[in-house]
Amino acid sequence: MEYNILTMLFIVYIYRIFRLVLVIFTSSYFLGIIWLIFVRDWKIIDTDVDENRPDFYTAFNIGEKPEVMQLVIVWYFAITTLASVGYGDFTP
Image (cartoon, rainbow, N blue to C red; front, side):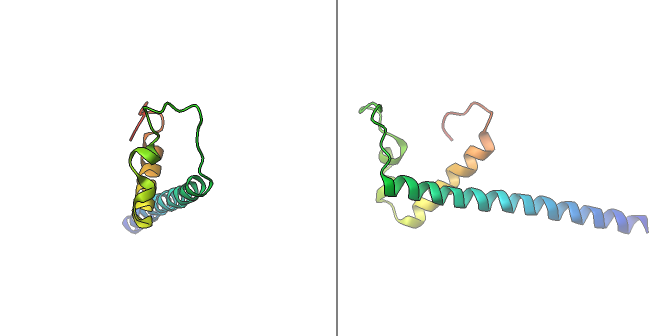
């Protein structure tokens, strides 16, 4: 009987971890989409940026790639940012 309770608890904790990972991936994906729309449509330009050092969006020609590829890139950087906060990384 005790083995069944431990098995059930194990399954519940695995389900909770899976649910948490799914929520993190989904929320970061949609936040990335919102940020991409915000940057692309409102053309946010920082006037204090050095001309010799372009920003990420223009350096890698994100605007010229297909929209699906743009969303994958945004999702990758959102997940990388969530995973590396506090490690001192400047770029993913």
